[in-house]
Image 1 (tube, rainbow, N blue to C red):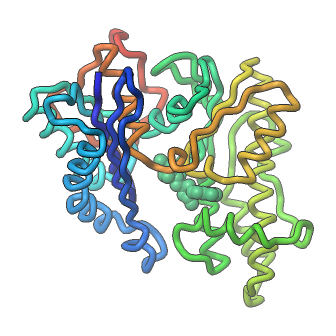
Image 2: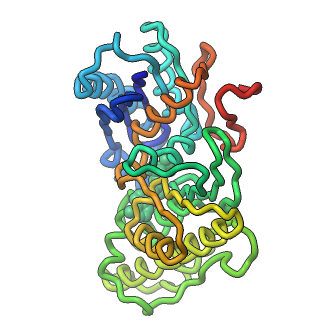
Image 3: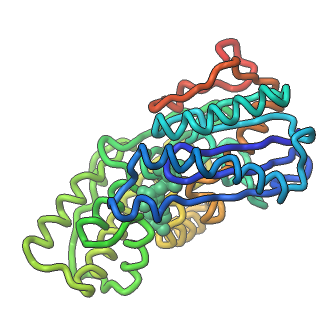
Length: 342
Ligand code: KG4
Ligand code: ZN
C-alpha cells in the first residue's frame, strides 16, 4: 500500500509518499519561517494562505520525486488536528478532494500520533510497548504506547508546552522566531552556573509538567538590565538545562512507573541536541533503549503523517466523506483501528 501524506497543521507544509514495502519514497517540506519572522510568531491567517499557495505544487513535486503517478497512490492521509483551524482545513480539503477524485480511501491523522510514530520511520525502529516523550510547540506529554491507537497519557503540561517555553524565553532574550533552535544555538556559547533557574515540578510527585514559571524566572533574573550576547548565552544555557533536567527526571519516573524499557522522544523539542545527548546517556546507564527520529522528523513533516495514515488505512480504517479539522483533539480519544468505536 502506497500512501500520500499531507501535513498543514501549523507553519510548515509537509508532503510525503510512504510505501508499505519500500518505505519512505519521498518527502518535501516548505517552511513559513520567512513569513512569520517579522511578527515574532505564527500569524494563523498568513499560515493558511501560504498553505493554499504551496500545497499543490509541493504535492506534484513529491509525487515526481517518489516516481509515483496518481494511479499508484492507494490512499491519502492528512493531519486532521490538533492545530490551527484554517491551516488544517487547507490540507484536509485538498487531501479529501484528491482521494475523492482518485477514488481512493482517505484518513484524518492525529498530529501527535504522527509525532509519536515518527521514530518508527528509522532503522532500527522501536518496538511497542514504549513510553513516548512528546515535546512540541503545543504539547508536552508522556504517553504509554501499547499499540497503534492505544495511548495512555501519563502526564502532561499544566501550562506552557516545552517548545512554547523555549519560544517565549527566546523572545525575552531578544532572539528571533523560531525561538527554540535559536535559543539552543545561543546556549552553545553559554557558561554553566552563571544563572540559577528552578527545575519546575521536580519535587512534586506525578508526571505532569509546568514551564510557565521558568519564563517568569528568566524575566526576574534579567530584570531591567540590557541583554548582551554574553548574558543571552549564559541564560540560554541555564534555561535549556532547566528544561532538559525536568524532562529527564519525569522520563525516569515514567519508565520506573510503567516498567517499560523503551523510550521514544519526538516532537520539535526532540531535535534539541542537549536533550538527545542527556537522555541517551541516562538511558544507557538505566538500561533503557532510547529512540529518536532524525531531527527533521522531530519537527513537523509529511512523512510521519503518511506513515501513520498507512498503518491505519492498511488496517482497514476509513474516514467518512467529510473534511475533518479539529483545533483540539485529545490523543486518548483515539482507538486502535477496527475497534467498535472507530
Ligand atoms: O513539533 P513541532 O515542529 O510543531 C508543533 O507540533 O508544535 O515543534 C515546534 C517546536 C517549537 O516550539 C520550536 O521552537 C521547538 O519545537 N524546537 C526546538 C528545537 N527545534 C525546534 N526547541 C529546542 N531546541 C531545538 N533544537
Ligand atoms: Zn508538531
